[in-house]
Amino acid sequence: MNWQFGQNESSSAPIRIEAIVDTICPWCYIGKKRLEKALSREKLDNMIVHWRPFLLNPDMPSGGIDRKLYLSAKFGGADSAARVYKAIEDAGAAVGIPFRFDEIKVTPDSTDSHRLIHKVSAERPAVGNDLVEDIFVAYFLEGLDIGDLDLLADIAVRHGEDRNEIMEYLAGDMDREFVGQENRVAHQMGVTGVPCFLFNSRHALSGAQEPDILQRMIRLARQEETPI
Image (tube, rainbow, N blue to C red; front, side, top):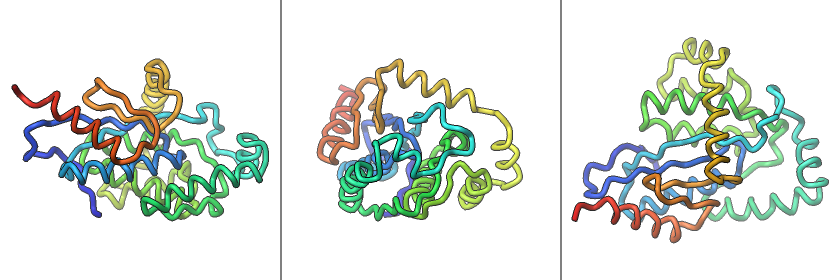
């Protein structure tokens, strides 16, 4: 499905959905697909989702680290990591994501990918969803280093951005503190894992919940916004 997220003018109950994610989190990609399914069931296929950053590895070096070293440190060895990722692969396959974890060579610092999402979606909110999708695809399906500025610029160009302007932005420090602050705010809100979805800034739903659960939350949010 080609999603173009914008305001749904036909809905009598406009709602705001915020997705707190990290671009290196496979469950966030699964959660995105499940949210899209829930929105399609509610016929909200023009809904703006506002993407907010979270850093699973806030102390990650700017160049990232070797993937095998990362998995060994995180899961205590290759066998443990394989068991964890097999479950993720199965969940991904159920929503049409053919994860290729074997292609990933580097676990990157995700800060610059968050900066790019923020810059582009702040100016053109309807582009945000497709941009996030392409970043997930690059990392999880193609095994590319989404900490690489040239790669991020290539992705941005596909969404109508000027390459030179994007490279100048990414090479600088603009919005770097914004990403760090958003990460701190998320933790202050009690978010310790992602994805986390916020509905109308009132209700939070943590984890890559099934579409049925997300759909019930969407209906609740719509009911709250419906004029009496």
